[in-house]
Length: 83
Image (cartoon, rainbow, N blue to C red; front, side, top):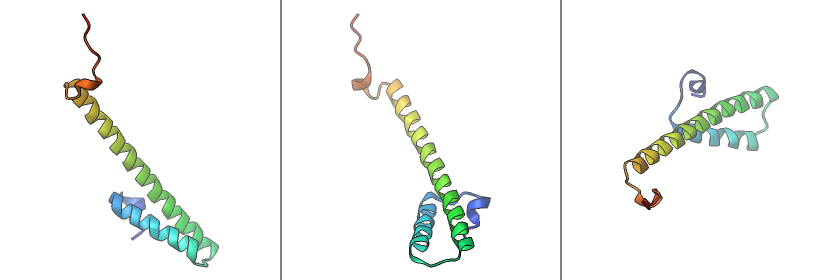
């Protein structure tokens, strides 16, 4: 299940759920060092995927907002024409 993070992105909600499980294991279990490192590596990969997805979403939202402003959907953000 965790190997999927290396091969292809998992859905955002699934990645968050997996991250939460990893954090719980890291905080609550006495694990050998190698297992801790493996969990940490998996968590870091999932965190990177989530950060990338959030950044992509932010860029899309900014693009949509900019397009709406350019189309005049938000006149309050447009400067007044005083000519």
